[in-house]
Length: 391
Image 1 (cartoon, one colour):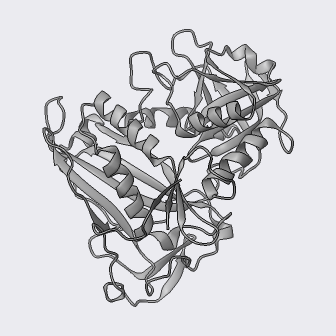
Image 2: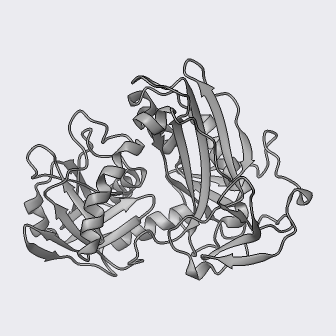
Image 3: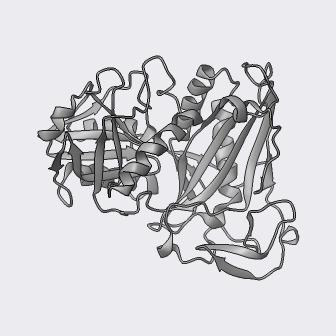
């Protein structure tokens, strides 16, 4: 476990005199000020006196879902195309200004990451493997011809955003602070080329369950028309351009009563790839199988962690091509991802057949989920050295 002090010399939280003294009110499940910013359409975060490390925003955390709830601060760092990122700064959460010809707007030159901060019992906070998100962003930046922050810069920025928005980290067991780093081409460009300037930005929002089902089993649909990624493309990096194309399939599936879509390979439409926003695993006996990350599948941090936990607990884990017909023989199926955690799949519709799977207590999914959450929240000893403590 890695420790860091609550405040560092490079960051100073604003004093109470910097906060508005307007009253609070509830708006769409959030806690916001009564007035709107003159330069932004976003509601202003709630204001109060500075909090001690253990306090949190006055909010009904039991009503928390997975939706944007603007917090107090965001982190911004810029650099030019041929330079390195140097030093960023905290800013109040709000809109940003972009040129109409920004690379991210015209050519989709952008990446994002997702990770979580958890409130620790007894005080302080835990981050889960932020270095892995930093490494994945560097890999993606190379693919998208972008400079990227160093691993140390990335992790330090994530620590700072957690500290600045610590009032928004839900109590233990009530959710987490979802942290969204962005790397985007903000410089103006007309011809197809890398942007001349880049912005690394992080914002955060408290969240709980990603799917509307909550912790209930998911109901998936095998998509045989649309594909998520193609060989030689960018499906293996977390570029923003991978996500809008799946909206059509998701919308159609949800209108038919499904939770999400399970995609097949683009060549033969036979092998399983991943769900729209998470990886997938099949369980049969003591063997856990998941599609290999071959360039079309995102190498998820939660996916990697579950593989390591499963092997440590005596399971045989296979990373290989999985024909969709193997869905008919699996005992369990579950999904993994930062947003979804470890989510059991109750049924999948494949080739006009509905297949049901074992869920609930005493399942492999539940065992792995409990271990992962225990490590993430500090209730189980972190023997892997994955967590970063902010105390």
